[in-house]
Image (cartoon, rainbow, N blue to C red):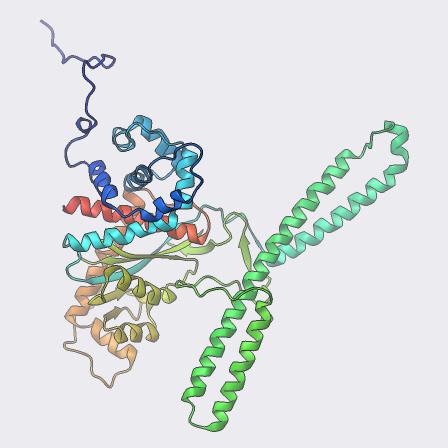
Length: 485
């Protein structure tokens, strides 16, 4: 007698419809995401919907949309098209959508329009992690990673190339118009009334004019960016001279500083022109290389696909991307603060990331660890003044090598800022903090990039990219919470 098999009837109908809760095992991530979304504060999104015209088709529930996005980001499904497809084919997505199947354009529009409110969910996950006991030590570490923008580095042009291309197009337009004019007299005889005959020439002229105007717009945007950047630089110089004037003990030095500050202010206002001074950003932006007059230098570049992105160096190669920052709890690997900038250097990110860490935790962390990319005396003093134990590497260490502890106790008061930091790093506590950093930030970036496959942003523009990075961190924290509770 042959081997028998278990019955398999995939097309057989159910006598009674199954409950959706029977589709997945207990403790599945989809249930956890559903419970989080049901308890989350989505009042900002709901208010945005209520302000719209009540007529027309009923929108999908905000909680449904948030649940689909969060579960997608938790499982490495970031594309709105793939999420829509999963609502038909994936059991967990089908459970979350409850028979609804939002179109991918609806999902994409929801994510785009409510990024600010979705970022608030990140803070909620931090506070939930604290309530769950995952943030007991309050020792955090800061690090950054470069992530590819939704743009190609080949779709960029320098200011010098823009000027050259604009001149070339203007010459081509003049030549084409002259050619059309020279042929105008015999066209009526050749093609008859109502036929120009130079349609192809006119189309070429129109095409080149369009390209010329487009390049002019890109040049104007780059010029404005450089001009406002120079104005902000002059403002910082004016503030520095005002502070120096207050500290000056000699009258001549004080007057000189005051005069310099006044001139810098006047220069700054002249560069702003009709534009209101832009509000200061918590995380600094890249400023194109510019002249003292606020004009872009020839090497200044602008990417046509995502102008906010910049060419950055990562692992010996260059990419068109963003510098993504994350402050991570060293024990639980929960992300407690996020930020995104378009500066390749990490040094200027420490101050705003400290502020965001204090804001999300609701208190000052005990210690703050960072690698040599964040080192500066000003950053070390900032942490000391905030009452945080600073552990910032003052120089790059060879991978896998770390000197044994040779110091003990607090650093002597007479040492300068750098010497105090080096003393701390050479204690047992400093060595332990640096070792912990290797098992906090780096695994988080590995889980995001390798395990969940997030290697490229799906949105464009610095504001939207910051929102998407916060969504990535929210999903990461949800996975940590799901594993812990």
